[in-house]
Length: 155
Image (cartoon, rainbow, N blue to C red; front, side):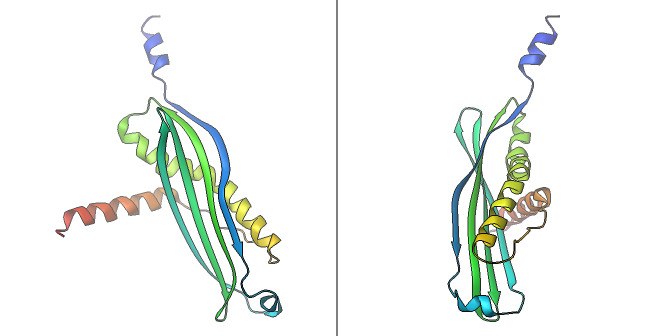
């Protein structure tokens, strides 16, 4: 029985402490004339994640989403969102912490960000915008490859 007790104390912990909107901005610079346009807007979507420790075993992850929608040469709307999450992550092997922060946390935060973006676009007077799912694992792997290539190249 005493052999099991240390294992229980070292069990990995991954808890969601809080999900919140850190910053949200919506702009419709060409209102009201933009509402008379009938063409579909062309979307430019940018997604970024960052994470940082808050205290021992507590981390903040921020998912930043910027969407710019244009109709012809006019900006229809712009949405900038920083959706945050606070996570308790403890007893993970060091090599597992970075993927947890770069993949696991954004996967949890993304549905909340998608809802906030859709609501903001709707309240700005446009049809709801449903963001497609994002594969944060692929984004993480691409970032790792870019960092490895940059490290291998002399400056």
